[in-house]
Image (cartoon, rainbow, N blue to C red):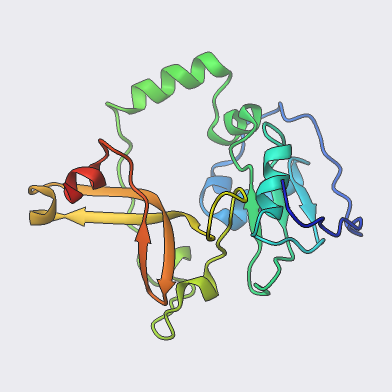
Length: 207
């Protein structure tokens, strides 16, 4: 719960929400985050607001209140005019089933189990076409200026980036490779620390 009451004026844009059950999403909806958001909006599966929201307890308080509900898109993030924030992306399993083309929870379980040993072929996309390469920052690398950090509860002493990627390869990982994500805190521009769990890959590296 937020420690400061949020200004909750109604947005002028009203989203008409629909039943989350329905036909599967087209493959294009999985190609990029903008395409996914566009599909959610068309299908009436997206809550959207222009009301300003802070990453310090406000956004996470709203997210928790709507556990299991529709994805929420915040178009106005306090202190980050270049950012929009989306949360509860995978909160509603009926929407997840539609997005990935699973008929029901039984089919979901079986197809996920099958995919563990039947990987789809990789697809290489050139850097001139890849959406992830649309904006590349090479100077002024103060991470907290660009990435929207959040705080979940008043017990946390600082804001965090909830899912920064960690990569360890080669000699540092006994000849193998690790790609994962961790809560990260950037305290010195582009230098940060991150949290690890006992027994995890990063815990093994540390010990």
